Image (cartoon, rainbow, N blue to C red):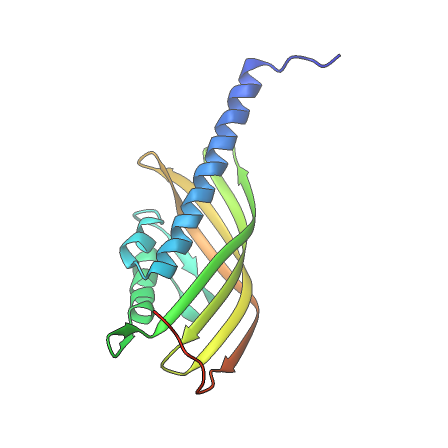
Length: 164
């Protein structure tokens, strides 16, 4: 015969599940903002003050600085069309919600980029390690570190056609 869970246990379970769902939605908004070339949406995923981001080759800085770097890359255009085309897929989330109202998470990134300036395609993967906190009633990313595991860059041939 199974024991009936204590109401406090159920309340904690539901709160933890809701936090994991909200953090997952936050990270998905982050990936969508990256692919949609939305620096404002990108910046909104992070705490207002005190963020710390380390994206390896892109640098280590706060969210305002990274949003500026993101905009300088993502918004480049050639002949009135975007020159850098990205696809971010975050998979394998591992999110831990702590009793103090903070959380941590790890995500695997599947990334593909077409660079129409350099005429290259890059496929890569890496790991995000995040810390989250609630700010103004919403989960936000406080720290984010990205570590690339591997990448393949190959030239686009003259027969390659890109529709956008």
